[in-house]
Image 1 (tube, rainbow, N blue to C red):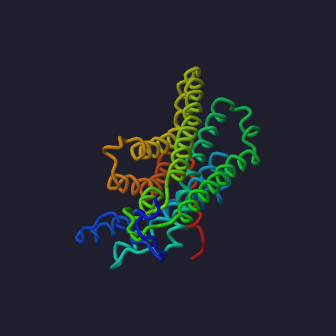
Image 2: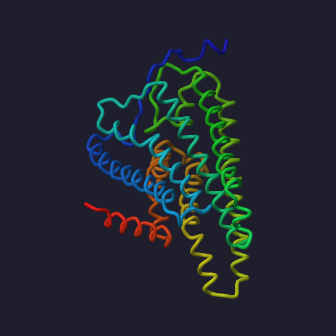
Amino acid sequence: MAWMNQPNQTVLTEFILMGITDRPGLQAPFFGLFLIIYVISVVGNLGMIILTKVDSRLQTPMYFFLRHLAFIDLGYSTAVGPKMLVNFIANQNTIPYNWCATQLAFFILFIISELFILSAMAYDRYVAICRPLLYMVIMSQKVCWVLVAVPYVYSAFLSLITTIKIFMSSFCDHNIIKHFYCDSLPLLTLLCSSTRDIELIILIFSAFNLVSSLLIVLVSYILILMAILRMNSAQGRHKAFSTCGSHLTVVIVLYATLFFMYVQPKSSHSFDTDKIASAFYTLIIPMLNPMIYSLRNKEVKSALCRIWKNLHKLPV
């Protein structure tokens, strides 16, 4: 019978994470590098959340979405970063069974949410440029909350389905995850039971999430480009382009990384390239996003200057 040929099954209490590298000489430099990246990410995203909340001039739909983008970046970098940093200095890179499931659930929740929040931001830019007179009517507070709430609910649903399907399955007697965090694909290699259903769920929803969110972004920017080309004023065209520049940069960086990871040929696919790409979009992109929006955005820079001046006016 088929079940007699399966490897021994056991009740796992923990997993061993292989980490980014197994070279002892690189552990300390990588710890220092990723600690700096994570601290900058936390400070930058927390700063963006606080700034867009307290400054009265940033109470617009664009910054409402930007605040949620910063929250999501903070979420999935924190789901992965602290444990990865501990593993650089720990003798054995272990993670408890329940923590592994929790890490996977939160990571899926935040990474899918990011895709659709970026789509919502593209739609917001479309309305701002193509329907400027109706902007505040179309992008009402209710609509903004719907555009944020739907991705969160949908992402939570997919996160729970994927995590429950994986962790309700039977694991074999080996518990070494070839990654630096609990990701779905490395975990599937540890299952003794059939992974066909789970792989199909991951494949279908990953393709849907990437294609549908990117399609919304592309359609929005095609309509934006058409509207900009119809503008008579060069100054108006420059202003329209500048309001989209930061968002477009963030979109290109994220989708280029994801397509590199998921669309590469199977023959060249390896967990080592996965780890490099994963390190980029779990830690480096969350660090870059607030920097891109603060350095390329005059309103954010002006808000930072106002807060800095107000702090200096406070009595010592």
